[in-house]
Length: 250
Image 1: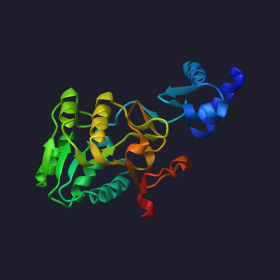
Image 2 (image 1 turned 60 degrees about the horizontal axis):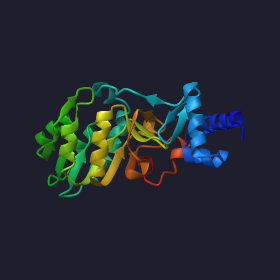
Image 3 (image 1 turned 135 degrees about the vertical axis):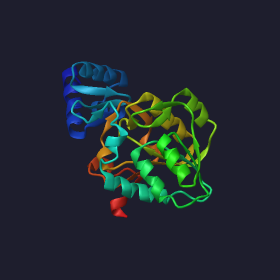
Image 4 (image 1 turned 30 degrees about the vertical axis):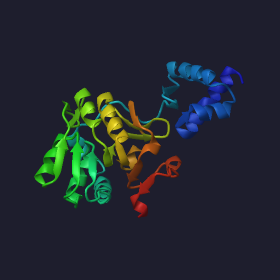
């Protein structure tokens, strides 16, 4: 296939799907991965698409590079977040060793947690304060404080997390995307999320419908790594994910 025709087909697929993987392009174009990578680089440099790890996204896709301040995020889709938080809190069992990621939806979980026998580890400073005030056994990991998300990050926090083995964990995310997985704007926070998730037996990502199809700058997990708890899914291509828990269907 001529280069111009490959470019047209790549852009057609992106217009149709929003994201596309290298494997999908190999099957559709019948050409080598190295050729496709060169094509994506050329189209990226010309502003026709955004090249990401493992594929590409449409230049018109929703792409987030910065975190919104916690005080502003708390009221976004609040009713949906509360519904997700209530359901998620009921997944905590007696004597669980729980990882609770910093974030607004995970923070809403605290008011709904029933069992007092579980132990909680978190990188969220406010989460730790609220858990302790409610009488839970809580461990706050040490490290550098990121003010915009009130989360502890950095190399000391990573070393701290690698000592633990969690029975269950709950994470927030800025984006859920077939190509980029779970993603967040900050590299340091992404590393904390990734390591904690790798140390967890039962992992859940909590996200309202607005996060599907979104992409942030740093991936912290594959979509298959955790069950996704959401209020609903509006984008058709995400409705068939096997690990979805859609609460509007409950």
